Amino acid sequence: MVTADSPRAPRRALVAWVLFDPACQPFFTLVTTFIFAPYFVSAVVGDPARGQALWGYATGAAGLFIALCSPLLGAVADAAGQRKPWIAGFGAMLVLGSALLWFAAPGEESRIPLILLAFAIATIGAEFATVFNNAMMPSLVPPSHMGRLSGAGWGCGYAGGLISLAIMLVFFSTSPETGLTLLGTPPALGLDAAAREGDRISGPFTALWFLLFAAPLFFFVPDTPAKLPLRAAMRVGLKEVSGLFGRLRTRRNLARFLIANMVYADGLVALFAFGGIYAAGTFGWGSLEIGIFGILLTIFGTVGALVGGRLDDAFGARAVITGSLAVLFLASLGILGLDRDSLLFGLVPTAPAQGLFATLPEKIYLGLGIFIGSVAGPLQAASRSLLVRLAPAESIAEYFGLFALSGKLTSFAAPTLVAIVTTLSGSQKAGVAVLLVFFALGIMLISGVREPGKDG
Image 1 (tube, one colour):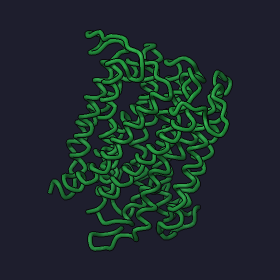
Image 2 (image 1 turned 45 degrees about the vertical axis):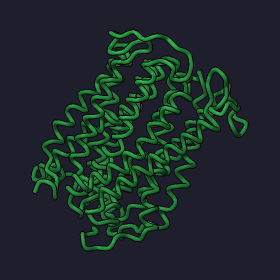
Image 3 (image 1 turned 90 degrees about the vertical axis):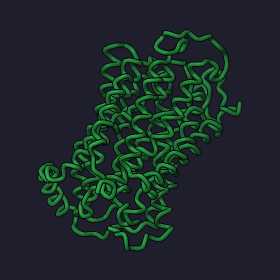
Image 4 (image 1 turned 180 degrees about the vertical axis):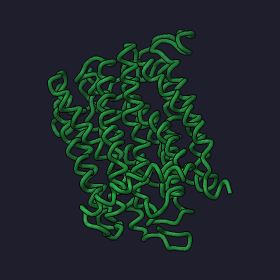
C-alpha cells in the first residue's frame, strides 16, 4: 500500500486507472438506465409494469450471484496477488453479455429469457471487474489523495457515459413515432429504425467502448505481484472467507459501514435502474426524451463527482455520503408526487401541453433528476474512498469483495422488492416508493460510522 510518504504511481498509470470508470459507465448509462432498459420495457415486453418487474427480477438474480461470490473472489485475489487476470475475465463477460442484447427485437417475447440472461451476465462482469479495479487504488496514491483519485474516476466515468449517450442520441437511437434521431436523420450505418436497431445497438456499442477504454489499464497500470498459484489461492481464500465474519466482529466500525453501504447502495442502483422506466410509464417518454434527460443527469453527475472528491478530502467521506443521501431522499419523494397531469400526489392539477418536456410535471422531473445526478457521483466516490481508509491494506480485495456484496445486495434486494411491490400493486409508483426506506435507513446507519482522521 502507498503510505503518506510514498510517491504516487506514474501519471500515465493514474490516467489509465481512471479511464476504467468511463470504460464501464456506458453499460450503466446506455443499457441499465437510459436507452436499452426503457426500450426493452416498452418495445420488447410492451407492458410497463410487467417489463419493470421482469427487469427487476433479472437485476436481482445477477445481484444474488454477485453477493454470494464476491467475498470469496476477493479473498482469492488477495491470496493470488494479481488483479488484471480477474479484470480481463470479467470484462469478457461484460463484452459478451452486452453484445447479445442486439437480438432484443421488438415484440419478440420468445427472446426475453435470452435477453435477460445476457443482461445478467453483463451485469456480473461489470460489477466484478470493478471490484478488482477498485482494489488497485491503495497501490497508486497515498491516503490523503484517495478521495481525489476516486472522485476523478467517477467524474470521468460520468463524462464517458455522457459522451456515449450523446453519440447514441445523435447517430443511432430513434423516436418510435418518426424513426429519426435527435438530429432528425435516419440512424447511422444503415440501421433499420422500424426494427429499433438504433436502440438495440446500444449493447454492441457498449462492448466496443469497454474494449477501447479498458485497454490502457492492462498496458500502464502496475499490477500487484503474483503470490500463489490459483489452486493454492482458492484454498487460502476459502479459509479466509470462513473466518471473515468473525473478524468483522472485531472491526465493528467497518462492519457498520458495510451494512450502511448495503442499504443505501440498494436504493441508489434501483433508482437509476428504474428511473428511465418510470419516466417512460408515467410521462410516455421515448428513448430521445429519456436520453436528453440522461445527458443532463450525466453533466451534473460529472461535476458533482469531481467536486465531491475535493469535499471528501477536505471534510471527510462520511459528511459527503450523509449529505448526498439526504438529497436523494427528498428528490425521490418529490418524484413520487408527480403524475402526467398533476403535482403533489394529485392535489394540484396541471394543464396539458404538447412538445418536448412541455408539461410542468415533466419540467419538475427534470429538475429533480439533476439533483439526483449531482449527488450520485459523490456518494459512490466517497463510499469507495471510505472503504479504503477503513479496511486493512493486506486484505483490500477481500474487503472490496465485501463492499461489492454490501453494495450488490443492491442488485437483488431493492430491485426485487420494487419488482414484487410493482407486481402486487400493478403500480410503478408503489414499487419505486420502496426506495425511500433505503435512503432514510442509510442516513441513520452512516451517521454512526467513525472516520479515521476525522473523529480522532
